[in-house]
Image (cartoon, rainbow, N blue to C red; front, side):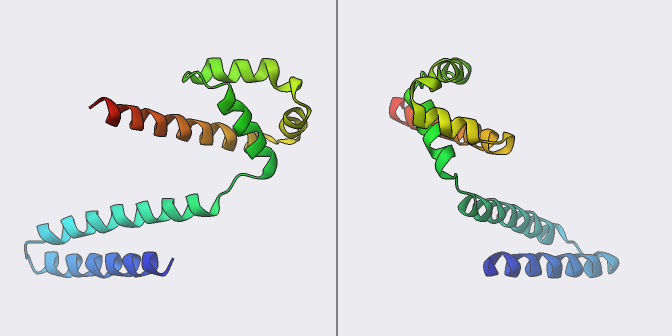
Length: 127
């Protein structure tokens, strides 16, 4: 987190410098490029920190593992298969019924990340 605070401070200082130099009619093209780079870095670090903090709970893990068992690489058909058969396993059924809307959405988001990861691996293997 400290690194991100330092990056934000640097971004603010560059903004001040840009403003002052533009007032004096100096070319600030390089400062703008640096600011854009810093902005991207700050955003990516913020997302990475959020992803590290956010973990699935036990019920979400159980449901996600079951969804992955039905994985046919198509989101909708996989979810349909899960919805038709989750009641066959009592642990999965209990876990699924205890999820609230937000937790259910987080499971779907994790499943999509999983599919994207598989897709990227497949693309690299085919090259």
